[in-house]
Image 1 (tube, rainbow, N blue to C red):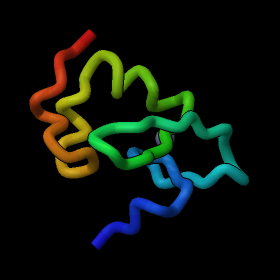
Image 2 (cartoon, protein in one colour):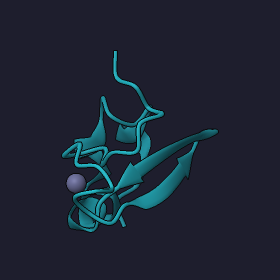
Image 3 (cartoon, rainbow, N blue to C red):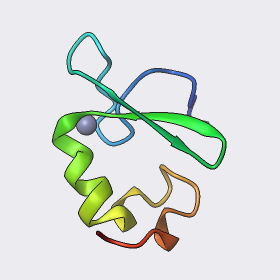
Image 4 (tube, protein in one colour):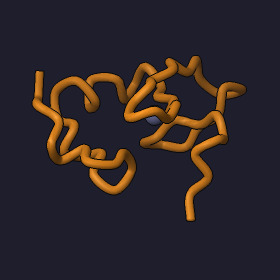
Length: 61
Ligand SMILES: [Zn+2]
């Protein structure tokens, strides 16, 4: 099981030592994502399916 308490990018799992991480609060949980993958969250959140709960329901921006 993935540990969502770790401060790593949802997508590439880089930690804040490697990249600046942006905090994302979603459905009562806190996630982090790096600037490289923010566009994925914005434009193609379906790619986060399995990483974020119900990501498939997110609307692309
Ligand atoms: Zn990333």
